[in-house]
Length: 531
Image (cartoon, rainbow, N blue to C red; front, side, top):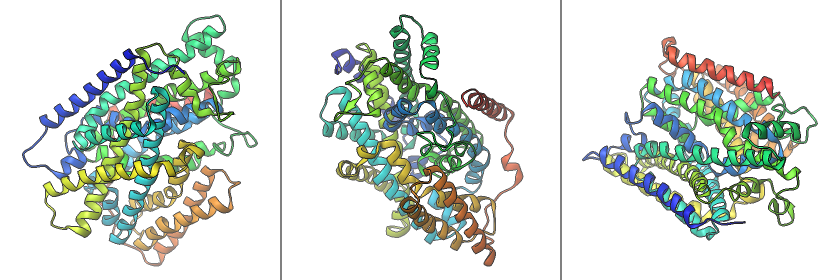
C-alpha cells in the first residue's frame, strides 16, 4: 500500500494546528478567574445548537464506524445503515421526551438522575458500571481501533499512534466541555469533507471500472451489479439475519440499543445538559439530520469496495493472514486517494477518533468527580478541586486504556461487534430503569436495582445459553423481562418519588416539529425504497 506523502502530512498538520489553535482560543476567550465545575463538565450555557449537534456526531463517529461500518457495508450492504438511520428517529424521541425531564429536574449526570429518582445505592452501582464500561470497553476500543487505522494508513508505529491520539485527545479534554464542543465543529467539518472525498472517489472508481464516468453512473452500476447489498430488511434464513434480524431493526431491540445510547448515556446527553431546552432540542435535531448523511460517508464506500472486489480488484489487499478481511475495505480505498486529498481523509479519520476519545474521557471524568469523588472522598470539594480531579481522571483513564487495549481481543471480534456485545449486556436493564423511572411514579428503588444488576445477569446468561437467538432479539427479551419484574416489585411496594413532570414540557416549537416530520418522512421513503 502507498503510504502518506509529504503533502498529506502538510494537510494533516494544518488540520492539527487549526483544531489546537481554535481550542486554545475558545479556552482563553471563555476562561474565568475561578474554574467552574459545571462549566468544565457541561459548558453550561456556552454551546449553541450547531455546536451541540456537531459535537454529538463527532463523539459518535469514530474508527469503529469508519473501519467497522465500511467493513459491514462490504459484507452485508446497506442494511447496516439501520444503526445510523434509526438513530436519527431516536434523537427526535430523546429531544421531545427525555431532554425536558432532565433539564426540568436539573439533572447533570446520569447517576445524579438515579439518585434523585431512586437512591444512592442504585446510583453508585450504575456509576461504577458506567466507569468500567466507558474505560474498559469504549475508550479502549476507540483508542485501539483508531491507532490501528492510523498506523495502517500512515505506516507509523502502532504504539506511537496510540500515544499520539491519546495526547491529542487529552489536550482537548482538559479544556473542558466548551473546548470539546466547539472544536468538534471543526472535527465534523474535516470528518464530513474527508469522508465525502473518499466516497466520491470510491463510487467514481466503480463507474470508471466499467468504462464510464460520474458518481450517478457509479451508483446505478452498484445497484445493478450488487443488488443484494441494497436491502434494508433481512428475511429469516439470510446469512446476516443473526446480525440484523428482520423487522426487529424497526420495531424491536434496535430501539433499546438507540434509546439507551442516545437518551441514557452520559457520553452523549452531556452535550445538551448544560443548555436550555430550545437549544438542546435544536442541537439534537441538527444531529439527526447529520445522521441521515452518515451512511454515505461510512457505509457506501464499503459497498463500492465490494462491487470493485467482485470485478477482480483488491484481491490481495483485502486479505489478512490469507483470509478475506472486510475491515480492510476503508483503508484500501483511502490509499487510492491522490496525494493531498489522502491527507484530508486521514485528518477526517483522526478527527473522528480524537473527538470520540475526548468526549468519552470527559464523561468518565464527570461521573468519577461528581458521583464518586465528591460523594465518597471529599464532600466539601470546591470548584477548583473538582476541575483538578476531573483533569487527573482524564489522564489516568487514558493511560489505563493504552495499557490494557492490546489484551482485550478487540481485533478478533471486530471493533463494532465488540462494543455492541459488551454494551448490550448492560443496555436492556439500564434502559428499563430509566424508562419506568421517567414515566411511572410507582417505580421503586428495588425494581431499579433488579433491572440494573438482574438485567446484566440475565443478558449474560442468555448470551451463554441462547447464542442461537439474534443479539438484538436477546436485548428485547431481557428488556421485557426487566420491565415485567419491575412492575411486579413496584406494585408490591409503590414509590412516590416521582420526577417533576407536566404535559407542557413535551410541547415542541413549530420549527422543531417541521424538522422532525421531515426526518421521519425521509426515513419512511428510504426504508420503503430499499426494503
